[in-house]
Length: 224
Ligand SMILES: NC(=O)c1ccc[n+]([C@@H]2O[C@H](COP(=O)([O-])OP(=O)(O)OC[C@H]3O[C@@H](n4cnc5c(N)ncnc54)[C@H](OP(=O)(O)O)[C@@H]3O)[C@@H](O)[C@H]2O)c1
Image 1: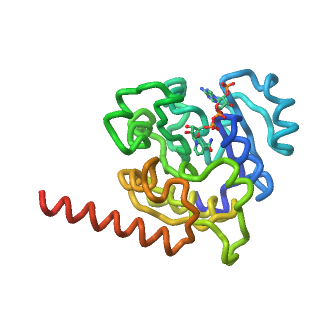
Image 2: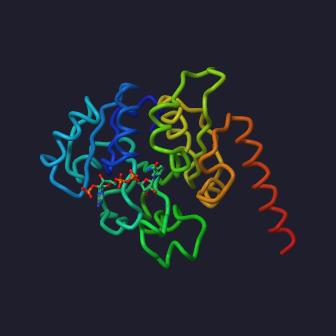
C-alpha cells in the first residue's frame, strides 16, 4: 500500500483518545469509522456531537473497510479483539498499560514493550505503535502544519518498514512530525516512564533521545 492509498481509518474506541484522533483524521480529509464494544446505533449520537463527520460502525465492518486501524481501547480489553480480522492490516497501537486502571495484567508486568504482546496476539497484523505518548487533549490542541516551529514530534515503531512509512505519513497528515524509532522492540523507548512519554519535543530532540537509547541498548548487547 502506498501512502496515497490510505483513505479510510477505522478506530476501535470512542473515548478520549479515539475521538481526538477521529477529529484530527476527519479534519485531514480521511473517511473515519469508529466502533466500540456496543452496537453502532448506541454511539451514533455521541459521535455526531464529539466527532462530526465520523461514522459509527461495528468493529468487523470498520476493520474490513479500513486502510489503517487504530487501537484506542483500554489495554485490558485487548483479548476482545478477533485476530483473524486484522490479517494483513496496518494497525496503530495507541494503548498503554496502566495497572491502576487496567488492573494487574501479568503479561504486561513482564515487559516494558506492551505492543510486542499485542503483536503476538495479532500475529498477522502489521502493527505500529504510535500516538501512545501524547495526551488526548494534546492531539486536539497541538497539531500544526508542516514546518511550524512549534510542531511536536510523534514516535512510531513497528516490525514492518512499509507499515511504518504509511503510519509516518498518516502522523504527518494529522499534524505532527513523525520520528521512526525502528522495530517494535524500540517502542519501549517511548512507553510510560520514559523521558519521551508526555514530553513536548520537536523532531531533532526526539531523534537524539531515541538514538541515545538505541546506542545504550546496543552497548548493553555487546557487553552481554
Ligand atoms: N487518555 C489519554 O490521554 C491517552 C493517551 C494516549 C494513549 N492512551 C491509551 O489509549 C487507550 C484508550 O484510552 P482512553 O483514555 O481513550 O480510554 P477511554 O476514554 O476509557 O475510552 C475507551 C473506549 O474504548 C471502548 N472499548 C472498550 N472495549 C472495546 C472493544 N472491545 N472494542 C472497541 N472499543 C472498545 C470504550 O467503549 P465501550 O466500553 O462502550 O465499548 C470506550 O469508547 C488506553 O489504552 C490508554 O492507555 C490514552
